[in-house]
Every structure is written in structure tokens, then in C-alpha cells.
Amino acid sequence: MSDDLVLAGDIGGTKCNLALFRAYPEALDIVAERTYPSRNFANLDVVVKQFVADTGLTASHACFGVAGAVLGGESQLPNLGWRLSETTLASALKLNSVKLINDLEANALGISTLTPEQLFCLNSGQPRADGNRALIAAGTGLGMALLIRADDGYHVAASEGGHADFAPRNEEEVALWRSLATRFGRVSIERVVSGRGLENIYAHLKQSGMYEPAWLATRLAASQDPAAVIAEAGASGEALICAEALALFLSAYGAAAGNLALTGMASGGFYIGGGIAPKLLNSLKNSGFMAAFTDKGRFSDMLGKMPVRVILEPRTALHGAAVAALRVV
Image 1 (cartoon, helix red, strand yellow):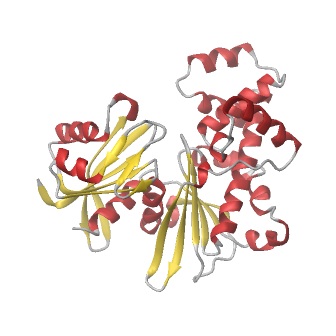
Image 2 (image 1 turned 90 degrees about the horizontal axis):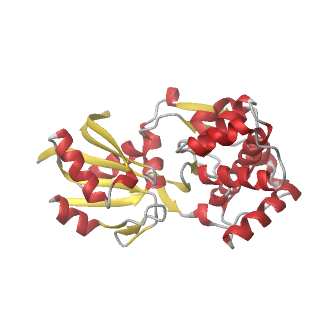
């Protein structure tokens, strides 16, 4: 066991990213890193033990950003069914300490480690040094976090805002809501704004009568990631149904982001994380995302002044988890 290393994890519904970090005065250095498919393992401790076996390295302290609410050092991951406990993990992995934080909290903590080259500017805005920040991230699910400005820097507030109610804004979204309500009962924002949400939108459009080409049906049936197929075909314009699904998705994403920006008064900057946005930069900047983001009535001008940036660095949550782990070393 190495006392100068910390173990960090970004634990999502699709994959588990693990890394060992060594801290220097001005930076964090990754010593070892691995990625594992989440659904191939029964629980997190099994993943970490595989990581230790693969690298031959371990640490005395760990922090894991997890895709679920963390209460009293415990969490249940809704997209995996895993039950996690800081004390149980520390015992099973023989670590001095284990910290569980929400994955968006980890991403938010990681923002401070990013360089300008690791961000894509969607709206330059007019950032306020004394303003709060906010973060939204669509991937397998939808996460949100607030960064509250204080005298000693930013304090991160984790959130499960992705599970708040989806609020349709027009007749097209009302029809989508009705379709999803028939399938699921309650309709959360995550049912629309996430990888699975994009699949839900596509299914609604198909059910509504939009044409699905045979080649697309074949490609979707063969894919382990239908959302990626829909996004790719929508971005390229190969299939009208995919282009319509993508446009609806990005507009709903922008509206949800604007709601969060209003809730947190994110005049210091708004950030878009997750695995979807970096793959759709061209579509994102040419879509209705920013129009929906700023379409907030009397507060539209304020939203238009908020800087909006896409996080390009896929290790942001890992760096944030390492920052949190180092606080207890």
C-alpha cells in the first residue's frame, strides 16, 4: 500500500473509470488508469480488486464519484442496482478511508483542474467573479450540481435534479410527454435528456408515424448503444427521424440547462459535462440549445450573459475525486 498515492473513481451506469494519482504542488499526476464495463461486475469492491490485480498498485485513501445520491456515506446506484457504503468498501478493500460523493460533485470539483484547451466555448458571456457556477451532464443518465461562491472559493452542492419533473414547453413536447407518461407513468427530465432519453424520443417519433429506413432499423438492432447510432445519423442528416430526434433532444437539453442556471444564478459560468456533448459539438452549436437555454422570459438577458462551456476532458470527474480524496490524506 502506497501512502503517497490516492485512488479515484468515476463510477457510472456504463463504465467504471479508476485511477491512482500522485499530488504535486501545482498538479495531479495519473500513475495508473483503467476502465471497466460496470455491468460486468457485481459491485464496486469487485471492480477495485480487479484494478489492483491489473496494476499491482493500491493506495491508503480513496474517493469515488458515483452515479447516485450519497446520504450518510451510502449510495444506491439506480442504473446499476449497486448498494455502496464507505465503511463496507474501506473494510473490503483494506483502505484507511473511502469517500463517496455524487459523480457530478466529482465533476464540479474537477473543473478547477481544467485548462482553457479542455473547454469548448458555446457562449462567451460576461462572467462575474463573485457569481455561482452550475454544471449539467447528460450521459447514461442526467446529473446536475451547483458550485456556490464563498469567500474561500466554490462549495459544491450535489443534486439529483435530473430526476425532477420534465416540463414540456410546446405541443411537440406535450406529445412526447404523453407518450412517455403512457410508458413510465411519471416523466422525469432524465427520461428525455440522457442517452436513454434520446432513445425514448426516437421511439416516440417512430410510434407517431415518422419513417424508419430499413438500414437504420438493422443498425439499431445490432448496436449496443442505440443512442450513439441515433445521434450519429441525426448529426449527419442520414435519416430525418434521427435528425428530428436529435433536434428535440438538444432543445430539451438547453431548456433543462437554463432552468438549472436560473436555479443556481450561475453568473460565474455554466458547464456542460457528460459523455454526449463533446461528441456533438457541431450539432450543439448549430442547434436550438442556446435558444432554449436563454428562453426564460424576463430573465433571458441575464441567461444570455452567462458563459456556457462544454467540458472536453473525459477525466474531469477522476481529477475531482482525487481532489476530494486528498482532503483526508
